[in-house]
Image (cartoon, rainbow, N blue to C red; front, side):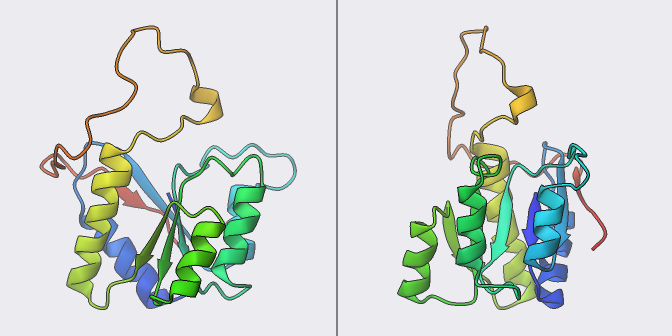
Length: 173
């Protein structure tokens, strides 16, 4: 997962909340504080293949290089990045911002909480749905036909169990 967030306090609140979540899935939170840093992470230079391509992007609406919806448009216009779900994190509830982000193909528009304890609940909801319940597109190298004849979609809303050992880690800024 890649968090693109320029506010150091919000970045730390989200990182701390992720570290406290217990999940059956291995989740690694990477962070970027600008568009340039995010795009460098998503497109490694010198032809190097990224082994850390995220499965989910958390995008602050007010990244410093340009408006988050413009960065979102760049991500969704990029064939390699288009399949990645993008959750827009915003301080604004402006209907214009909401419309602009959904028009740019955001998967969700979420208003950031205002306190540490609410950040924990906010992050837990993201992990509960986007990590534990939603069936995301497999990475290109993991795509193979389902030969088991099994169900392609998980049962949604069966509830998240955060009782297993913590598997969420974060990378240094």
